[in-house]
Length: 458
Ligand SMILES: NC(=O)c1ccc[n+]([C@@H]2O[C@H](COP(=O)([O-])OP(=O)(O)OC[C@H]3O[C@@H](n4cnc5c(N)ncnc54)[C@H](O)[C@@H]3O)[C@@H](O)[C@H]2O)c1
Image 1: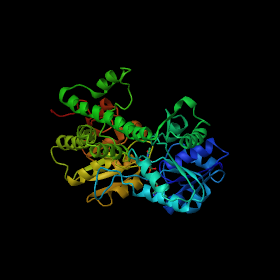
Image 2: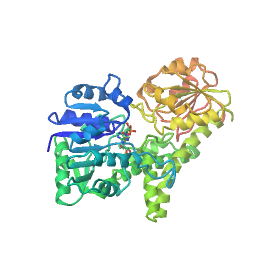
Image 3: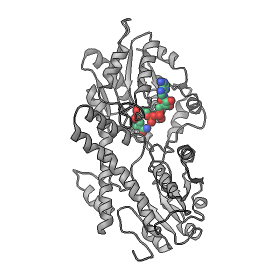
Image 4: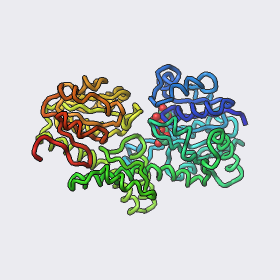
């Protein structure tokens, strides 16, 4: 087999994963294709289409040597026998399963395109997150023509987290490869395993049956989101009882059976995957008649909406039951720090709800203002965009921390306070600020899951 790899889909997953493989396997030629010509042009420029720490260097090191970005999907399918598919699989917005099921149209189009253009046998790898048993549909489409060409479908879900994608790919907790338990299936699996084994210890490369692999990705995201929703429910209880959610999380997380990660209470989780993948899991459970299981997981998403709405209600109540005409600064718009990605960011929900309350919203973010503008373009309201947080906060009645960017921890809050309308408020949706210090400066401070620090009687 030629040492060439194709990846279809040059997004947050396709671009970085292939750059990593190119860097670790200099003897492989890697091509990444996409139907979106602007995206490909950006991958070929100095201004990459996504922000990810360390990505610029990785692409600079490999692009034009053994990493190529192109819009020639058909030609690339002909030329490559190992094909990763990393196209988007958003939640379906129409027809049966709308709002719940995965929209597999991009996925299926890709399968048909592979079939139409393949002139030799291929290994096709599901990198996208997909409902369990999608590989069966893929196999049926690909092997629908009796032309002597065969296709082996593998599942190799991606576990990278945006914001730390490069580190995650270089040092993954595990790489998962699911295959059919046949000779051909095992052979295909070994071809992919060989690639990862260049830099990942063999004991961290798990091989499973293909359905377990598909399902594990959905379950991993569901468990991560569930931890966030769990601690967020406790933050609501803390606010009623003067317990401090950070202290509770620390005490609970020190139990080695539980672990400390993903226990930070916040305004809620975002990102393109958690909600979509849980709803996908819920849809699958309902499809198989497992109503109780579906209801259980659906609440994880329900609690996330509840937490965001609670944040708005806390702002409204604290600010004398009216936000109309008030200027509110959102510190951060990305769904998490170190990315420009705003998909499903709680900041979108908060900005929309503030606009519904007739507040004026000033948005600040070091990397996500372009995406924020697109997200809010169709929402009625007054939105301003200022990259400089000091400019953004000027004349505002309140700051709301939406993203845990490090830069917000070390701003000069005294200077900010001086330039704000009084009484000035801080709503810390990520619990990252020094609340006591902000209170001493003069702010009324509302953390998540901790008693507020206010200069009024509450
Ligand atoms: N973003 C993450 O952190 C993350 C992590 C793990 C897994 N995933 C999964 O990986 C998959 C991709 O996610 P993403 O964030 O990279 O999405 P994305 O939207 O950033 O990228 C997908 C790309 O696929 C392209 N595409 C769609 N149809 C195509 C076709 N027929 N031919 C060629 N290109 C096509 C789109 O133009 C787009 O650029 C999803 O299933 C997602 O659930 C994402």
